[in-house]
Length: 371
Image 1 (cartoon, rainbow, N blue to C red):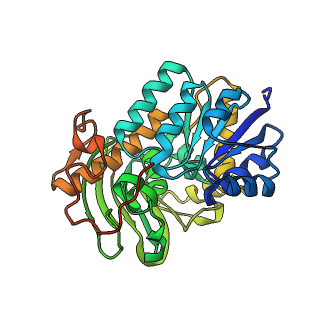
Image 2: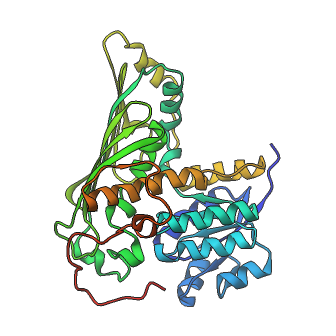
């Protein structure tokens, strides 16, 4: 395949921008990081110096008006994602959008409409989908070698102390969209959903156990899937022993992934059911030395653009995950099961993840602008 060398810009130069810059430099034969934008000019210039970026633009509008960028990586706080992505789409520029992609399902639907109208694309950064071992799991499952999917667990037990929430936009529905369901466990259960296929129903609880937030700090969900599997999903920021763990129980084998913030091939284990011991060799027969992360997904984005296709993860794929989040909150806050497709345009949980309001009082912190 012939590669087109593309020009990329990063908007927002906080900590996650470093992962994007590293991925771009790792693929510098295919894409060049040519500009950065940040509301703090000093921080933007410092980032540009560190990563040898030739240009610092005063704002996204100026960058887009110049017409010399093909990809924009949006790495800003969550409340700005939808508006910045929409600016790029209206300019016909592809967006690589950090999680959470939007604060609500309604915002995501605005991007879907704009993408369909302009022909420009949004690729949501769900890099766990591209890690080593995951393609092997997909292949074995698709071939039927693992048998029927029966049960899964998806647990994100992380720890964030009170000081973490001193950053004004964290822990607020208006600026972060939600708690660990929205900003921490999202990578793990997105991977779960991408493996098990369409989900059908969510029954959930959410609680604010300890942290000084308006949002939850713990959520738990039971999920049923169209393919017959059932799963539990746990998202936490109050767990001192941190772990990210996925387990898939198929009829013929258990496949497990245990790590923290990123995984390698060695983080997977396979336990075959009696009579299916050959699956151990089938799994081990194609080891991968690659790590997961932004580079693997960015390479897939560039491959798709070179082929004239929509880059992964598409807005349609993203909607499945964002609708799941909205359904989880809706179930937790109303006490009722929520089915896929149930949350229509006028539903309060489509408009905001806290919908009709969280069942606990606000944390009483000073107000902060969502701008």
